[in-house]
Image 1 (tube, rainbow, N blue to C red):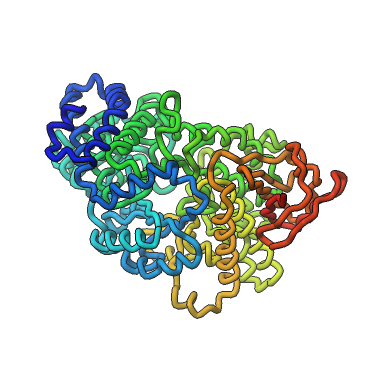
Image 2 (tube, rainbow, N blue to C red):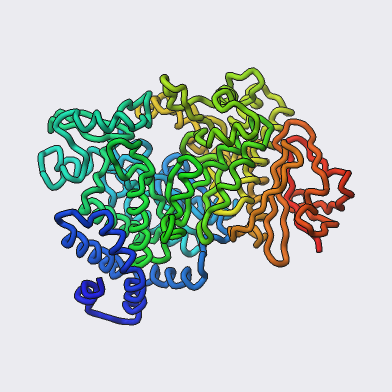
Amino acid sequence: MAEIANELVVNKDADFQAFYTRLIANAAAIESLFMSIYGAHPQRDQQFKQLVTTIVLAHQNRRAALKKIDEEKLHKGNWHLSQEIVGMSLYVDRFAGKIQDVGQRLDYLNDLGVNFLHLMPIFESPLGESDGGYAVSDFRKIDPRFGKLEDLHSLKMDMEQKGMYLMLDFVLNHTSHHHEWALKAKAGDPVYRDFYYMYDDRQIPDQLDATMPEIFPESSPGNFTYINECRQWVMTVFHHYQWDLNYTNPAVFNAMLDNLFFYANLGVDIVRIDAPAFIWKKIGTTCQNLPEAHTLLCLLKQCLQVAAPGVALLGEAIVAPAEIMKYFGQGLYTGRECDFAYNATQMALQWDALATGDTRVMLAAQPLLAQKPKGSSWITYTRCHDDIGLGYDDNMIASAGFQPYAHRKFLKEYYSGVHPDSPATGALFSVNPKTQDARISGSLASLCGLEKAQKENSSSARSIAIRKIMLMQAHSFMLGGIPILFYGDEQGLVNDYSYLSDPGKSYDNRWMHRPIINWELWEKGNNQDGQEIYNATQQLIRIRKKLPALADFGNIRWLTPHNIHVAGFMREIPGQTIYCLFNYGSTTAYLTWFAFRESGRSVKQLYDHWSGNKIETGPDHEYLIMDPYQFFLLEVVE
């Protein structure tokens, strides 16, 4: 590796020496990871040389300002753990219009306290066959619907001046069937046929299908699509227009690594790896979460660490809790795979607790989630662009005394509004008629009951819904990691049903919680519920940013569940102790003061950052009284 780097670089200045040092430090890991996957491939040596060349050229093409940011982040160490980072995920067109219009909303975001933006997919994808932008036809061209690459550069410069971070999606598993590679494969080019899984007959597809689950059984059943143009069966795990890339071919890995560096050199701070669980396929398995997929992610991370060390990776693995933890790395690579993972388990369990008023299922998951390696972190959230899955372990449900199938059935009925006691307005997504598995669609506000309350013009129901919204947000904000708002939630927007009139979206009810923002209506200031939610969200962000104990240093300790309706944890660093308490019950809850002393420390007075009140603790046989859906953010007063 060193020889290749020395051959390629003419000007060996101080910047090169820092790069060269990182290259040497990571060389053994890079070679070992590459060879463990591709060691028997006939093009092994040629492709390994290409990999090293890609790393070197990526660093050379990195602008000086980004290299300076790399140095600053390396000097800070674990910059991404800071409690001062708060994010928002948004669709450019539905939030503002075009990329340049997002730039005009930066002051709005700054006022709210958001300093980290996740722009949902903005690269070219075919209209009507885009899967929300995750069917990419050109990884390096901004879709004209959103603007041009120059607009993204301009937005990034504005964000840098305001101290804001940027995250973009990198769709690792597949391309659109309109991508240049797929078009060449359809035309019979043998080089690009090897970029995909293509078969003359159903023999191998049938073997794979025997153990592979269906991702979208309603809208896109099966995992293979017959392509008339080339008379081939092509693997299409997600939709028929998304062709899975064949990572057994090292040329595919190198091509996608080069695309990853393109994103890094745009100035992206965090790259969100979409669907990493699916990138390796093997007969006789589910073709998800396989060891080789983790090896490839580790290889991506080590390469990135050399050429663009200021860029972090987020693995979008919405899988079972035990599987999520593996995306931080295992064994020698513990903490060296993805820097972030979505805390999807916690998100779903908060919805579980909100529906049942019982926190025991949530608490059963915490010992496993606590195994996250130091230096890595979560993306925490209550909603995102996707559905809400209920894939947490059956034993977690059973440990709370519930029957898993019946419990999930209740949750589906509750959030789809079928249950008679439910205030929620949601819908079931991707129902599997064979297993009755399903996920849940709906905005934060609608699932918390605000849509129904507004339709019924009930002030009391609106008040309860807003309390639920803020309870959910406060919990995800205080856990540790980077909390990401889904755009529109800060305004309390309910489901947007306009998607039903769009043939390219009407088949996918997830679009109901992907609203179109009406800025004219918002700026008139006549959305009283929305303004109340916005102000409360702004206050939560301010509280989070000023409390260093909320940075993600692995300093969370969950409290013993003295009351099944109340979830609580302690966040502590030298000189600061914070107790965060959340009543998920619909009735008043009583928490013994012993809960604050159980760790052995003396706690006499607490300051609630949310209400601004000071609270004197009482004896162990007395209680902190919590109203329905109330939360406290209590700092110990020394």
